[in-house]
Length: 230
Length: 220
Image (cartoon, rainbow over all chains, first blue to last red; front, side):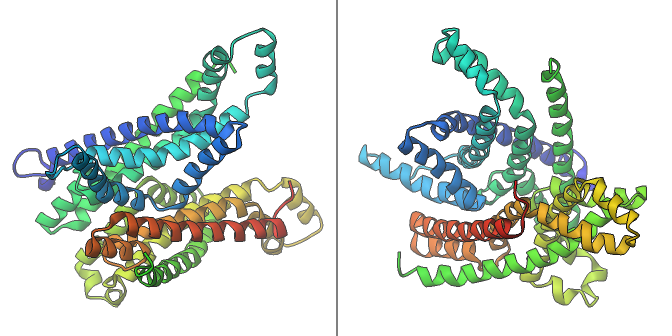
């Protein structure tokens, strides 16, 4: 237990901060994923063939390659790409992109692909009559989307989004390979310096279980709250 | 791009080996735990639930580290026969992947068992078919058919999961791609080629499952 005490002698405070980091990265990734999903869902549902292909490519490729690959590509490739762009503008120094940003972006791209599928499914399950009814009532297309489709889409996607959240939360452990100090990285450091990997990786597992457990409870509450009228 | 291809392909073989063995052991584990999950005894039931909750609630990377670095910490294991197995990263990876996919498979099979119509079992009972035969001849085949689509997804998830083996020094497809990146400093070439091979494997698995679904699955 001494190993977990707060302060200089234990790893308690470090692990606590690392847990906060994991939560922060997960939320950032989820938010980035939403942006991607809101861009690609309309593309996937569009009647235009080429837009459709772009949308399908995104979800198929991202869901077909390992998460680690996306992270490595962004981590190793991202720096090169940014430096190349900078060199065009005449800056030749070394640029290092923040590990938090790369990590959140990589996980965000992945969770965005899953969110896209969830949103697509939710929109498809909205009754067709509603589209027709709002059309008959002369409601404009964008108002129809914001006031009628979007609220229902969000409510219908809560259960599946909770799955996406769980996947995202677990995927953030992979960012540890890029050196961002979240739960996994911190336990790796702690395990290395105390030579007690069994203990610290068990703690990491418990922390992740706690996070998934608490977030499940919160999402269940949300789900009950938003399905009141149904 | 062509020069790195043979290296990556040899990695892909390791990836497929890892996938095949962990799917094999995972299916056995999953089947056992699915049967435990539908058991009425609350202690057995809770145990199986705890297993699947742990392995589905923690990242695969944690499980892999726990087995690879953690188990080696236990003096008792180090001196026992098991040390031969757990000192090899390859076997550690297979153990971790099998346990992980076993948890997901048990959930897939459990939900399939529970959605079997009661009428089938009652019909078997009224015909005097024994419990054992009802299970092997009626419940199990239906459950397997019903879980084919979800199981196909699980295989693809596991294919992506095997890339984590590269973190514990196994030279699978991901490991080879990392090596190429380090040696040539061409991250795009290395990782995109590896990505294409992964996509290709996903595509093949997806189509095999689709074919099986068409042949053996339920027409809906």
